[in-house]
Amino acid sequence: MIAYYINLKAKKLKEIERLNACKSSLQSKQGEFNDNEHKCLEPELTTATWHGQHASEFEDIREAGIHTPYLEIAGAQFAKVYDAIATKIAALQAEVISIQQTIDRLLAEQAARRARATQS
Image (tube, rainbow, N blue to C red):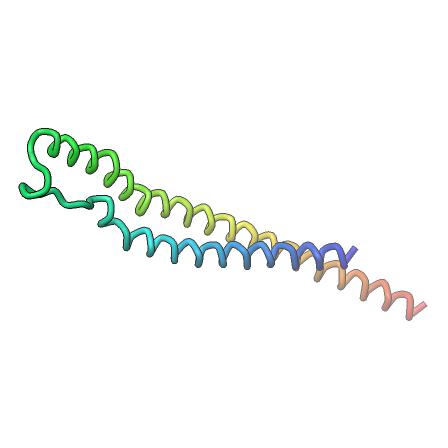
């Protein structure tokens, strides 16, 4: 019975480790993502490259259809993922504490049984 809880605790700790690694990797990817924001607005349109009504419409589409959603991903969506990871880590940490309390209780019960058996 105790071995089951020890294995369960190890599994939960491994999940926490994986989530922390995921968070680190995600932070790296977010940095890359933020570094590439300028690419949403390339190429820059000038009177020498492209201008007029179609160029203005293209700029509007690029800003509203590409750049704005890109910023949403870079900000709010990454934040939601970080919050979800933090929530899951907190839940797993609470489970680990509970499992450790169960292990401690079972070990104490086992020690008490041994002490009673020795006294008999």
